[in-house]
Length: 265
Image 1 (cartoon, rainbow, N blue to C red):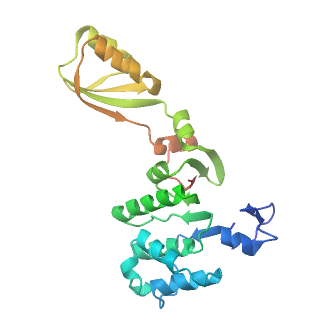
Image 2 (spheres, one colour):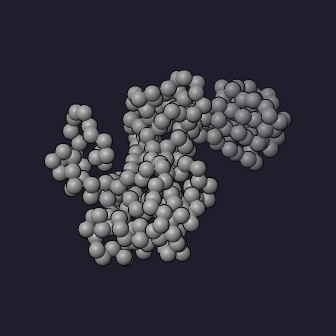
Image 3 (cartoon, rainbow, N blue to C red):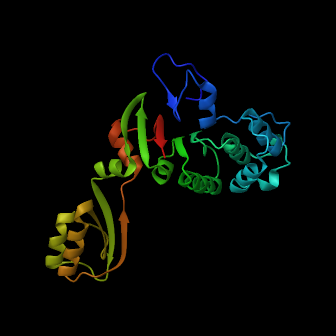
């Protein structure tokens, strides 16, 4: 889509522009953040973004550059040379560089790979804000919790084959199965109340601490059962199914991590 590799067949349209007939126009529509960090390290942060603006004919882009630096916590590094930045700062600069011409579509190739938790969270917050402004974001990631947090639509690719392509909520609901509920009761359950809870396959972790398996639509039945037998609880934890579980069910290989997961916000 970025035009870096020539396609062998088919048609690509971006923002209403055909990639073959209007290649320059499509480049204005798209911004790409590669996984590899590559810069001319002699330039400062501000110079990198000013040069990138020039490629798109943007001569007076200072206000937008200032905003990007502020959003990505690079304001105080404006005059620092790229070679002096940390790895996380260089990754944020890649994102600013891809956004300098305000593209409609942003493609990110594992933008949080190898970064610390604090930076990952700040990038997540920035991407969510950017998406709310109307920017379409395609994110490739091995972190399934990242896809679960950020993405409205999920595409899962296993060994070059698309095995899922649908809205995240629908995908999660389709594979949700049962959820785990952990309850700490005020008193140790026994008698008819304990017998009635058997439909939820209870397991005692402690005399008054039990774990149950409940269908998502069966939570109301669980609470009605507790109320009917006057089983009061002091602590409740509901463990929702994770995208990782959905992934493993889909590929059915028993692998602990994906070869490649593509997610679309």
